[in-house]
Image (cartoon, rainbow, N blue to C red):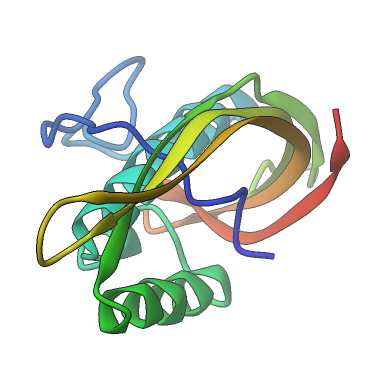
Length: 158
């Protein structure tokens, strides 16, 4: 599954730059902590992609096969004439990874505070969904000086 249910709150366009995060000018260190920073940036940009129906910047934080799944889903939502706003509260923990830290697996209990579907034409809210949490496992791969999410699985409630 691509991620937890589409649920966002508007997020600023300015990239986050904490602890040498994805928005920094240099490469990220190849450490589990850097993978967590990159994971948080992916989640921020994921929310933004569903709110704007624009996935053009996701390739900076995601790679195939997950990137293609999200791009297809957002395109489908755009064809339906709607967009989503949601916000996920994150609590990522490193679950494991490769010896050289080129792959880091993150386990998160993602809690969706609220998810709202809007008409892209009128801006009117069409539906709402509130509160839910699921285990989320993300595979972060180090490539070209940064971590990108490549696979994600949503599991049971947490």
